[in-house]
Amino acid sequence: MNLHPVGQFPAYRPRRMRQSSALRRLVSETQLNVAQLVLPLFVRNGRKVRRPIAAMPGVFQLSSDELVRDATRAHELGVPAVLLFGIPDTKDAKASGAYAANGIMQQTVRRLKKELPELLVITDVCLCEYMEHGHCGIVHYDKAGGRILNDPTLKLLARAAASHAEAGADIVAPSDMMDGRIGAIRSALDAAGHSETPILSYAAKYASAYFGPFREAAESTPRSGDRRGYQMDAANGDEAIREAMLDIEEGADAILVKPAGPYLDIVHRVKVATRYPVGAYQVSGEYAMICAAAERGWLDRDRVMMESLAGIRRAGADFIITYFAIEAARRLRDGQD
Image 1 (spheres, rainbow, N blue to C red):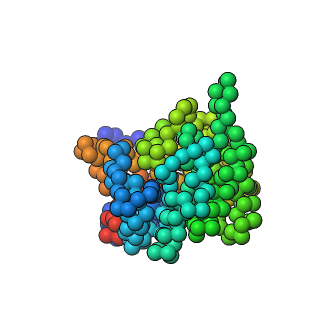
Image 2 (image 1 turned 45 degrees about the vertical axis):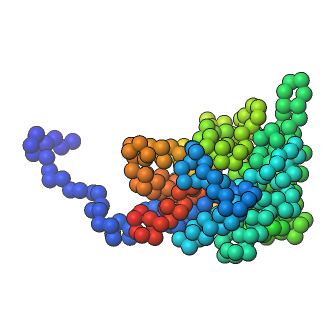
Image 3 (image 1 turned 135 degrees about the vertical axis):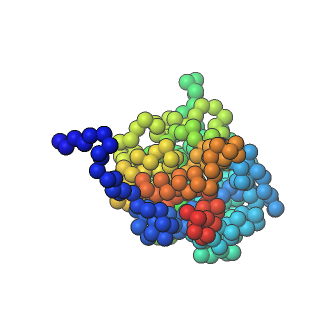
């Protein structure tokens, strides 16, 4: 080993790339592109409705006319897709609004495909927004309490997915985490003549506290209990791979990991293990944390926004569902990445 007396170190030769913006863009290892962004939107009945969501500054519950305006803004900036969540006027024990031919989701899909035919419309397939109890499946109550009935729930999920495809949805995205739902939905789509409709499976959806603000946005807080019985344990990684593989075997065309930021290792592992298209959902809590810290002056909102999205891409996500989609698209357009 060569020892150098103090003051006689060899001249330092920098290995770090000089920060020329032109060269940095040319050789950047991770490229974030507007074509990789998906904008989530919440729709409810009415006209000219733009109801603020307190925990998510800049995000709203929208009537379909206002939703079309926001979707148009996003599409004009190059955002290729939106993910829709429906909020019905009434809920019941069978989630009938989820598969009603003229339900809020079905109406909105038809309107979007008529007014923005080139926009990809992805629909969230779940029952929690439509169930009176707020859970993602049929609940049976007995002396021991309530429990989810998995197999009867599959029929309702399949019916909802088929109704979305019939309305014109380009992609259906089941987020319920019931066992066997991908196979049930694939069979229902094929039987209804929608064999070409892809399924984006929330295969690795964790029972996460980061979903907190979403409960307000989608009005889907469970009346009792929680969703840990059917969503994944935050401590488990191998389980995510098993879930993804099972869903692919049943007919999933792409895989989604949710949340994104706290689960970047899962995004990477799922991508490496499956080699399938993998998306990540930067969820409401991730968005709210950045917004709140920025409002207090603790973080630079724009820089942290772009850095967080780049980190999700670096982990292996092919696309990102994010409430920052319009803001990020504008910065990418203006070369402010």
